[in-house]
Image (cartoon, rainbow, N blue to C red):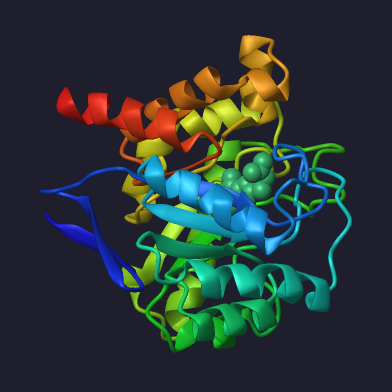
Length: 279
Ligand code: 7PJ
């Protein structure tokens, strides 16, 4: 059986013939982002970072204007639009697919007008108006699982059966999108590593990657780059988590993940080339 993900201007096979894992590079345009040290707030810096990722072979650039690291305060709609929109317009015709990391329906609407190929919503399109904002377009929709919200999610993450609960949440959200009239070929799921999860929860979910894809019958995006789950196993601080993050990306792809969301594009692209050459 062949299945493809409708990704705006692109079409990604995710099951059957011709499947290749895609590298999504993270482009933060937040002044407080922990991994990029806030260096990419200006358009100029954002564009030079994007150019480096393009040189390195990135497939998708994920533009985010609000830090969602644990404990982060929310950003106003106006600030987020001011950060993100100039970058989306500037990146639109450089080659790679463009994604926007937002949970605000008004940002989704503006980003679709700018021509993004994916809306990546850490909130799973639960905000009032989110489904209406994305319905009439052909961009992909990444539904991510999060327990609680970014300000409180790491205080006391708790599950009876984390894998079953994440699957149930993603199924409910996928059904809500389908009931709104959205084409199933646009949907993509994400277990949301680090979003209301302990290290044990994160690894239970990473180990269950193939099961999530199989039970939900949808392509999967995995985002674990530089996260605490990598630090917990390697004992390394955030600036030394590149190799560990590449290892985690390969673990996800080996179980059928279609997209890996990463900071270290060049290293991940090389690792996936070698991995694919051996499969
Ligand atoms: C994720 C994300 C993730 C998706 C962030 C960080 C925190 N979007 N946005 N999946 N994480 N789809 O990069 O450390 O895991 S922001």
